Image (cartoon, rainbow, N blue to C red; front, side):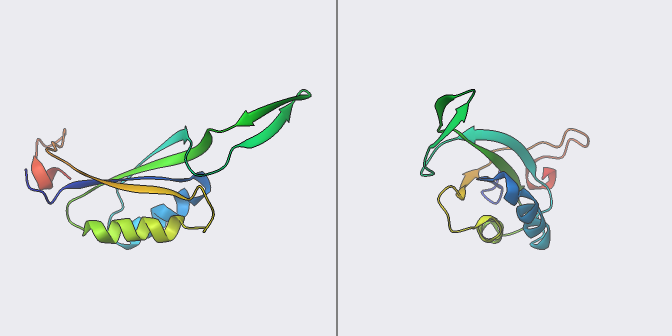
Length: 116
């Protein structure tokens, strides 16, 4: 399959999903998958209390957004996510771009970029 198909995967703050969704639609990439995830990175751990006991929260709730791109420049998609998810604080997230070696649309049987 052509190198023209890539998956853009972003880990962002959950409250920024709506902004990212709108930004992707604006650049012509409205199809996406959103998964609730938790993880840690540069965002500092928090100490909280429950029933008088202190505990550390070092896994932060995030959203993983995946968007397979064939018809829109990947750089436009990455830029849209970056701009929409940005707050300037630690924990804003990351964007990764991965090659897609093959794609098949289940309903039609189309393959390659046509399946996206």
